[in-house]
Amino acid sequence: MRLKVWRYASPPAFYRLAGKLVPWFLALAAMLAAAGLYIGLFVAPTDFQQGESYRIIFIHVPAAWMSMFIYVVMAFWCAMGLVFNTRLSFMMALALAPTGAMFTFIALWSGALWGKPTWGTWWVWDARLTSELILLFLYIGFLSLHAAIDDARRADRAAALLALVGVINVPIIYFSVQWWSTLHQGASVSLARAPTMAATMLVGMLIMSLAAWMYAIGASLMRVRTIILERESNADWVREQEAAL
Amino acid sequence: MTSLGLTPVFAAVVRRDLTLALRRRSDVLTTFFFFIIVVSLFPLGVGPQSNTLRIIAPGVMWVAALLASMLALVRLFASDFDDGTLEQLALSPQPLVLLVVAKVLAHWLVTGLPLVLVAPLLGLQFDLPAPALEVMTLALLLGTPCLSLIGAIGAALTLGVRGAGGLLALLVLPLYVPVLIFGAGAVSATLGGMSANGHLSVLGACLLIAVVLGPWAAAAAVRIALE
Amino acid sequence: MSWGSPQAFFAMGGYALYVWGSYAVAAACILVELWLLRRRRRTLARALSRRNEDRGLDHAPRQT
Image (cartoon, rainbow over all chains, first blue to last red; front, side, top):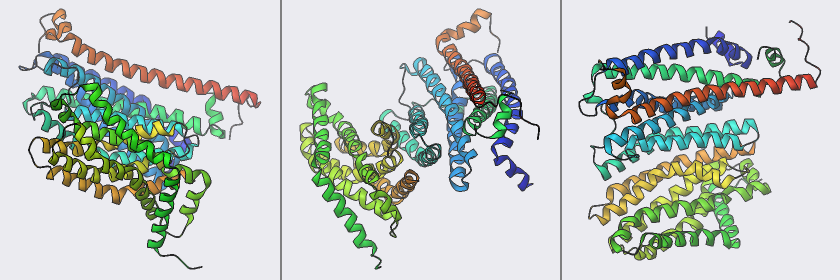
């Protein structure tokens, strides 16, 4: 069993596997999103404190969770690449980054739109939002460093090291920002309302998070297939694929 | 072939980098005067009321220190990379991590330490009382080495890259955030009459982590750049 | 949860701008990402076929 799995460390084998998996993940994402949106918009009741504006959490929280989860997974593949020297691992990390950055942006945008009716300002220096902003900078830094280095192998390894340094720093940055925000504004300013959430709200949030996760897998598998073709373009098997593109 | 002990090699690298830095004095002085000018510009932009200045002083001085240390970081490894010295250092029998520590120490001595020494004077521009000046100096003393150590990682990752300066800032500034928060927080706490010991302890912890992990990551990045 | 009318649903209790602003931007981001992925793939396909033509390899390869 272990031997069979290693087969997928080869780019052409993984390319074919990913090609078969992508439609399933995107279909799952669409179905879960439909269910989640139905629960979020038609089943979950009105919040007695925030009215209808709280429904933004069905976008904001899944996006925030995915932005952090994807960064960790990206760092994992970077570590795999550095340890085992498998170029497919680096390609997977590179494929995850833009999707992670997108979720970070959605989290920031929806967070700002949530903050305005709730706290009165378009930007709330809440610990989680500020950490999301820094996470966005970390994603952009990863992609910029990779793009700035011409040699693909060096770019992979340098960006991988940066991602690992980032993943170690993210908890430190998060706790220092959290400390800073409670000092300056008091613990009342927080966009997390978990204790007061009705069960339906929680279910809606979880289903949307699953939908986001399935989408993230689908989108990054799509991207990694293109990256594989770009990198391995001189190989015979790519020429065979070219007819199917 | 006599193998040299670690301490003499360490001292030799520090001495060499210091000599080179002092010969190219412009690097050292640019960082120093940048810090002074940026800090002095803020009162011009904000207005001379002492109350406002005292509140913004910790943040302003720390951000200026961050930016000033960014200026000098690009050259930490770049000139050695260009003339092949860095490759020789990587090939030498002494551990690269140690040599990186030596280079960072020399870098901090010429770029970070002057900021620490001039900070009390600049603090007076913001009408900071004596206890705050003390804490500011101590915080900078603990924080600027962190900036050099973390910055070395970015400097090594961007070796020989186009637009290295801007990219280095993008990579390294998010990592500086904890140092900024606790460094400025220490001075703000003192201004508010509270003890800064908690902040300074955290800064000390940041320094310890930076000393232990930073050179290791920077050495790994140097090896990646040399491949 | 029963909305009184479609108008009530779209009004979102007065928070329409914020709620629909978030949902719309999220949907837009996903659509843009998928579109960019397809465009990248199409550009690559064109580049590869052009390169294979230049090398005289635009016939189907032998079955192995």
